[in-house]
Amino acid sequence: MSIARDFVQRIAGFELNALRAAEVLGEEYEKVRIRPGGTPIHDLNGTPLYHRLPLARGANAGYVDVAVHEAFGEPLLATAMGLDWDEKALVEEGKRAARKGRRGLKYDRIRFVAFSYPKIALQFLRDEQETLMLELGTWTEVPPATKRDRKPLEPENFERWSFLDELPQEVRRARARNFKKRLGLWAVPQLRRIDPRLVALDTLRVRDFAIRLFDTRELHYSTRNTDHVPCYELRGQRTNVWCVAASVEMVLNFYRYTYDQVRLATELGLGTLSNPNGLPYARVGDVVTVMENLSSSSLDVTMHTNPAFNLFRDEIRANRPLISFIPGHSRTVAGYTRSLIHLVNQIGFTGLLVYDPWPPNAGVITRWENFATQTYQYAYSSVLQQV
Amino acid sequence: MTKRAPPPDASQRIREAAQRLLASGAVGDERARRPGALGTPVPVRTPSGELNSWFVPVAADGGRLAAFLQLLPDGTLMRFSSFATPPPAADWLDAKTILRRARAAQRPGETPGRPFLTYDRNPDRLAWGVIFTDARGAERLVFVAGDAVYSPPVGGGVS
Image 1 (cartoon, each protein chain N blue to C red):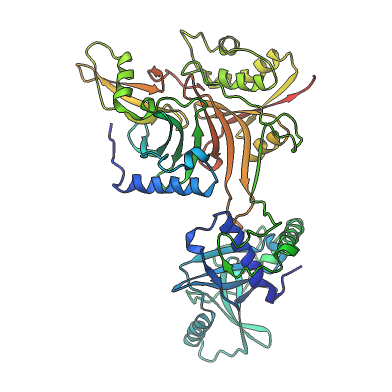
Image 2 (cartoon, rainbow over the protein chains, first blue to last red):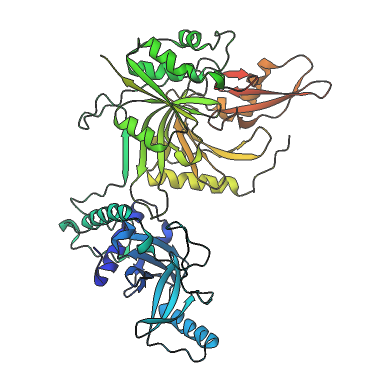
């Protein structure tokens, strides 16, 4: 599946407008117009990969890359303002560079090729056979392909390679499904009368159409979305070194076990109110045994090292809080959010809802903690075994 | 300890970044979006004095602190945190109040320095630091986090 050339401008418009609505794209994109035309960029094997379309707002110019091949998984590949894209001028410059390097060069056609995606070159062809390839901008000749014993998608510097030929089949299949799904979003009847070629914050504010920009979930009484009442409480740590006791208290409270921090500190070996201490790293496993003991093994607790965002997401989806250890501190996690619309190859916003026992005797609820700016050392998940 | 001053316009840039984050609706609540709710950003320094991040207070009625944003020096959001029971803003923003609290840990012959916003091992554990210097010139750090006043815990671990 690929996008027809005349449809590219419309898809580019919807994608840019969605990013603008999510404010992933800032003010510099407000009232930007997508100019018609655009340059097809081909794979090394000749298949059209994407189009680069010029953008304009007054004297300011930019471009947007829109995939026409499903192998990218999503239509919007890249965009920039402040960088002009003038296809004609580039071709003329390329011709001049070609003449300088090869006086007798013959060709009947020129096309843009992603010779090492995303690096672009001008390919000079005669009777559909390449006679020369020059890297865009540097106008350095791209050497012919040589047989190299290497893994796919691990090219050497300045090596030409085919994005489509080297992409594993299973990845291509998964991306194709995603691509189709995304195009389906822009084909709904509510958007038929919209002209998306002008980018604006409110272009997609159309009756009966809501684009899902974030995937967000918090702990609540059940996994039924219709009855969404949060049911999680913050506990401040009672001393400056009892963050683990406070975190354990919060999770056990969620499961209706009531132990105060003094008792939990005794169980965890954290001293007394008048002579408290923290949990040494050599004993981080104690959290598992203490929680299991205090719940009479009703809770099956697991310690995860270097937890990824997906662990937090999956546990919250299952309506289970987690304890999260970061360097020197412990808190609990009761929700997550992640942006669903972002640029390909860029990470969107991922955040956690953190019930943090710090500062002592108060604590704070953090909505959201940027997952990219914190170091997650350990997480503890707990699964209810018996009721 | 060296405390390098942030660029003169840094505080304003951070305030604008915080305003943009709140206006986008990605973080914050109605209280934080009210005109005038956002206070002056306070630099958060590493215990050795380098700029780590910025603390941007969100005021509540009655001179209380409702919430805060913590941003990296480039304006990237670290977190938006709110208090379940808003404490007096002075506990977190007034140097005199913080110093008065810190004096509870003062030893005979010690002189306190100016309080600076820092953290206890992790930027998640914000605290004001006050350095006490004794007659021989030896320095000792005391943390003030809300109503908690303490010396840095001995040894590592999770606390």
